[in-house]
Image (cartoon, rainbow, N blue to C red; front, top):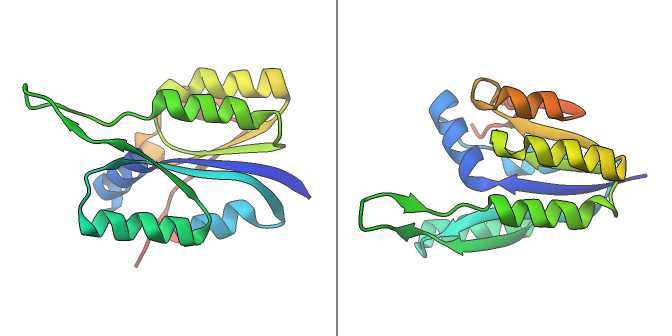
Length: 158
């Protein structure tokens, strides 16, 4: 049985599925697909913490599915911009789990992860899988992975 570690950039997946499909990502269906006949070594969902009840309920659903939820405070800057970026945290965790895993699954369309996927394949000979909304996933990220799986209706709620 192949060993898999799963990493979800929650904000990226939320906004890209909303923008393209006006729908929410189905984390249960995603879990079933990426864990089928695989041993889960680690599963992480990276989100921002705004502290509202609906968000807390969503985070509890992720935990019930099997994800460890990692939270970072959502920061509103005085200039009106906001910050809640998990890129470095995701990168560190992927590098830590790559040596223990046959497959690294990343749900994100963020092109900043292209170098990371290349490095994981080179250093650890791990297979990589990217799940992202096709038209909003960086071409460089699609090109850096062993397998790109476009998020479509089969991975959406409703």
